[in-house]
Length: 177
Image (cartoon, rainbow, N blue to C red; front, side, top):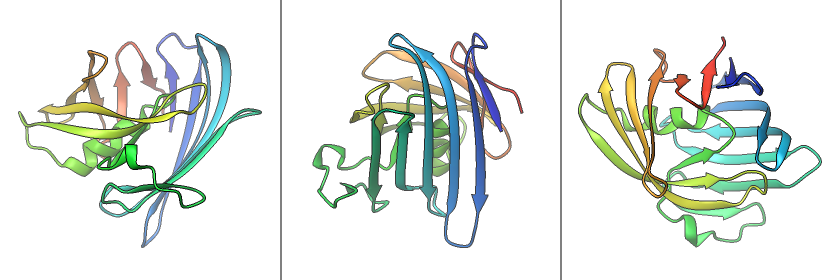
């Protein structure tokens, strides 16, 4: 799968591999932020209930992040130190990719008209700082969701494919394939 940013200046390529125990999603992103151009790699291990278990993010020639979750809201760093600020977060949202919006959409399995407020581990760019944020997802129709960043006031209507993977994220990303 591939996405471009809304202006066509960046590109993400994502591969997804399934096995009996989990799903492995690996992405390569080239993009622009206020600080300039960046290249980023990420790898997510996701369990069958669509809960993130392992998060690895690396800015090429820059910072890296590796955190792990028990799938029930407990997070630790790669050296095993508890990340109590992230307690209760079941999902991760990496600022560089629309794919991470797919995770709560699939995990929640909402009915049309239902809104769910969730806490997510948000990974910002370019420093890969991770912090808890509040988001809300509302299923508008079969393949359309309203995403709201409750701390920022940002909202976007997301269209997803039959697998719940984001097609278009107006003003931010467009799916190419």
